[in-house]
Image (cartoon, rainbow, N blue to C red):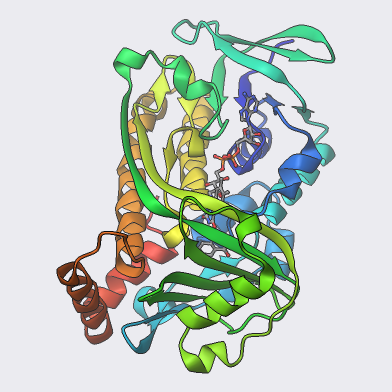
Length: 389
Ligand code: FAS
Ligand code: PHB
């Protein structure tokens, strides 16, 4: 089997890259470890930057997100006794779109089907080879047989636990990591959202987030202990704790119902440098992770895809490798800014186990500053809607 670009991983990064390359006549084969149903069962991100939506349109999958995605022109920070709306449109002229990652992957899978693209599922033992030569290849097990896929480039879109990052020699990799002493317990409920915009709440009991997928599907999160498991929280316990962390006037409007999904995600900041080794290019969670507080995970995978797509297009169409050579530097410059913003939003709104009164006073001073300064609100807004590519 041969292709121009082998893509390892069928999450949003791999699917979006394969579809963008296809629209420019560049052949790909995508190798995914899990079944399509499993990939589509994941409940993850919900907020799309305008750049991510633009990439979906460029990839020919912009119709449903345009029809069903909800444009949000602001969000509320509820902490320190106040509800502070951050007006994205007024402060930046831009907005975000509420559209679940599950739907993004669904749209991309359907586009790959329509293009009769080669997307192989249940591929086991996927392994990149000879990445530091001009004839790399990938081996994998599928249907009880070992297969070899020869290619010109390999895109490592295999997420945090995939094999591609490890294919870069350990001695040449620099990995930066920060783990947070708490997680997020997330609940999906078939109930109307408590508010028309997202509410990021900080309280002495910890962080909470009120989000949604559409007018009848709500997504809520509460900060929880790393030692917790979803089974420790029955629905009533979750709703009671969420109410305690919200302003009274919001809690009074909360419509509860049975959870249709309940999961805990640990919070971590992680960056691997470089993101390229020979003919292997890392993309998305394979290279970096952010705490979800800034709604950046999926969107930073999308910006990596933008840089890698432009670089591969320049190679195949103009025999120009300048963008391939600058890919890691270009992608990391934006990634580190999203790491900073996600870390900053997390510090602003979460309660840490060993927090001192001084730490809490600093949090409140930051919240006061945001409430009183248009410049501070603009800085938050321009990071949240997405920095330029
Ligand atoms: P993904 O992890 O989505 O996709 C990688 C793919 O590679 C997977 O399908 C995996 O099965 C496949 N793979 C792995 N190993 C392989 C192998 N050996 N061979 C072949 N395939 C392999 N971001 C937000 O913005 N907001 C959120 O609320 C949010 N919540 C999250 C909750 C959880 C539990 C997690 C894990 C992440 C969350 N994220 C959130 C971040 C998330 O959305 C990621 O940023 C996004 O999925 C990144 O997309 P990919 O880079 O494609 O990685
Ligand atoms: C979500 O809707 O899942 C969501 C929204 C904003 C975040 C994180 C998650 O910052």
